[in-house]
Image (cartoon, rainbow, N blue to C red; front, side, top):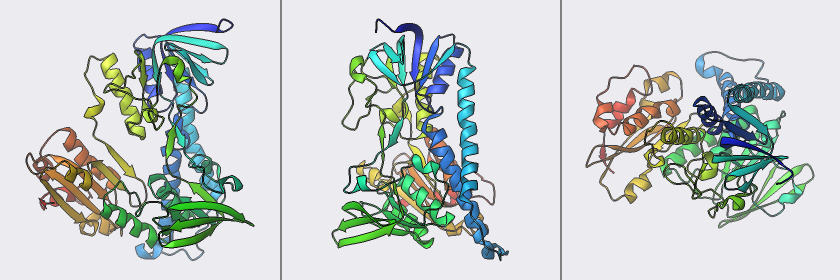
Amino acid sequence: MSDQKVQKYDAIVIGTGQSGPALATRLAGSGWKVAIIERDKFGGTCVNNGCIPTKTLVASAKAIHMARSGEVFGFSSPGGIDVDMKKVKARKDAVSGESNQNVEKWLKSTEGLTVYQGHAKFTSANSVSVGDVVLEAAKLFINVGARAFVPPLEGIDEIDYFTSENIMDVDFLPPHLVVVGGSYIGLEFAQMYKRFGSEVTVIEQAPRLIPREDEDVSATVREILEAEGIEIKLAIEEVGFEKNGDEVVANCKSSAGKSRVSGTHVLFAIGRKPNTDNLGLDAAGLKLDERGFIEVDDELKTKVKGIWAMGDCNGQGAFTHTSYNDHEIVVANLLDKDLRRLSDRIMTYGLFIDPPLGRVGMTEAQARATGREILTSKLAMSRVGRAKESSQTQGFMKVLVDAENNLILGAAILGLSGDEAIHCITDTMYAKAPYTVIQRAVHIHPTVSELIPTMLGGLKPL
């Protein structure tokens, strides 16, 4: 360290995902001298290979799917639909690139904020090195995100494969894409590439898709995907790979026996791991849990005084919106004298297949486990006027209510605009208002949200 330059700051932020930039600019705007460090692309996962680029691809895939559905809506495309994957990728790159550039410009133009590009490594509890510079500060904030996880499966070294990150570079159509992982990321890519024109097979270890969800959600998602021609193989206990000429063969083993899936390309979508293994955390006195996450308290503080961890690396929510909320909690407690807690957050998220799933709060299994008396109601999307008008009647909406106090415990809306309509319920839950508040609300017709009060009028014991 003696040969390195030392720069002193009030705060150091490591990483430019969803928490880092918002926190760094807010601190700088409050008169703090702040450094922010980025080793790769500005904006983190969401901007570069997560939400923004994937949902841009999802939008292209949906437009292609709708164009192919002309007969349903009264028009035809005699010449067929030509998909140009280079143009699809170029559109994705433009949208994602603009976001990336905007984050970089924002940070580099913020007064009081110095941007360092390079790999940060702790040298003590209040210092990190970046290249030939050592940065010191009384407060450090870790926002290093996560990356795709690929297990050491048999034969994996013999094949080329995609993850949710490097598949962003693809500008061609895989003839047959084998997706390993039947959860959120895997299913979005499976439907997307099927709509682009690939044959798609999904391999999942669990006995059903997205196993953390209720069984009716999993079953309906499977129906939606299989209706589009996606092959789904469940309860695969073991899978290994081998090359067979131009093909990649997945050798599957289950209780029913052995089977082979021959494809041309493989996408691994079986989870993510935090980017915490090369930060020199030992030098700061920080320990990781068994999954590699940095443990934090209700204010995102670590066990080392003066160090916070935000976003995917703390294991408290692997979503863009939870990462951004992490920075809001930190700022509220540090600057605003506003007591905010991680435990106040109600988990909400979406599965962005088409139609999408919006989820908030507890599942049925979680609600039952509380031992409370539960009320529930379920309404098919085929009863929703907006869904019928759009010829998108797949799915349902479902809610769980505490019978003692009438508070909503959780909900799922799987269907047209489910990812937007769920916020009616999310906001009611944050308000700690009884379900009768939203049940008696008058919503606009014709919308998806207008059927939420109707659903709530049909509550029965679970």
